[in-house]
Image (cartoon, rainbow over all chains, first blue to last red; front, side):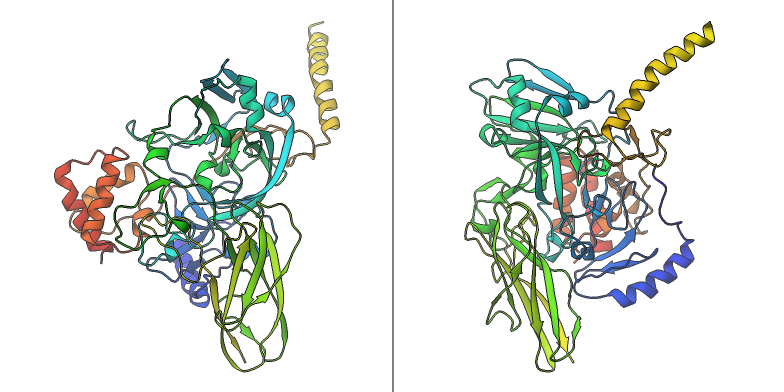
Length: 412
Length: 129
């Protein structure tokens, strides 16, 4: 196990610090500080999250659940660079039997089912036999920001930190499938990781993609993340990367690929992770009779990263406001900023384009000329013409949140 | 003779290994001798170096508060720690019944049907609306 970075404090001291640090941090954007005993209060019921440092290969993370782990990236990490460091990248597991030892020497990736020949690849073979590819891509939990849904819905109660951006390196799924040889009438490809449930009756976590999607040359099997092997909690040694799609498809500890000749009817594909088949997966609370489909492509989003609700500006002083944006399933076309609650909008300057699936930084110099409070807003327009809406989308599972983000600041 | 043989065997495996390391120009991990020390050594632009990884996951400190029906909540802990429940939004009794039934039907929680109501009432009492 990795040496913990901080020595845990006795409980009484921990409690004291919780109060001391917590009081200073209570705010709408949930700012946090890496101090033992620190926590963040998000602005929704039961929104207190301890900042913990006791997970392997991880720095300070917000604890949502210990077993199986749900760890949120503290939002200030997104202001520190366009790529999310591996040790701060959020963590989401469904089932509690997670292998705690992975031996690369014996690990095999199996491809079987509706193929000409079953194959079992060692990690060495995967690396040496296939052309390496690299892509910058956002990995975002389907339920990122669920805690902000109104009315609230049950689930993993994330704030905005169940996402991250990394440089993924690995091999094309297509190349691996071609090695096995897909039979002509294959329909879907199903992926399974090494995690299992505690109870035998708990369904194994498996996700499927249509055959054409699996063979599009973009979907990849990653063995490196930001230039290093993946942290175990992010899927070491292999993780499926499905650019532009929600992270539920990015199967961790991928070891089992089954080519299917009929639609996948397993629980996690056919009954879980379903969204209303409506624009932005949006429905009215209580609305019935909506066709449900598997979650798929991501929506555009943008965030402030260097200011938050409560930030104080000096009247007349120029301040660079900055943040991140992503287009979802395509690039960012524009990021727009408003300092008058959305009545008028200014174009933000976009940072380097690292590829259409990556975070993109934006910035804008802003001068607030009169004393008072300001409602600053940011929205992204993607290259397909999709734009974050004024009102948040809503659905019963708390998936796919996308809305103009707003912070309340002061000029004094 | 015997010692020499061992030395030869040792060198014949060691030298390619050393060459391999040089060719990969992989920065050494903090303790390459301890393959279970987590870790993830940085890799060069070329091939990754595969080390065995062993980690230890922390044990949850979260506990269900006392209350009528609290003893049934131990069933929840088979699959997940208590923090998941305590961090849910306050739910209505019907919503808690729905959650408990989802754990039974979708995930196979071995909770007898005649305990669903009692568990949901407990959850509603500690985190209800």
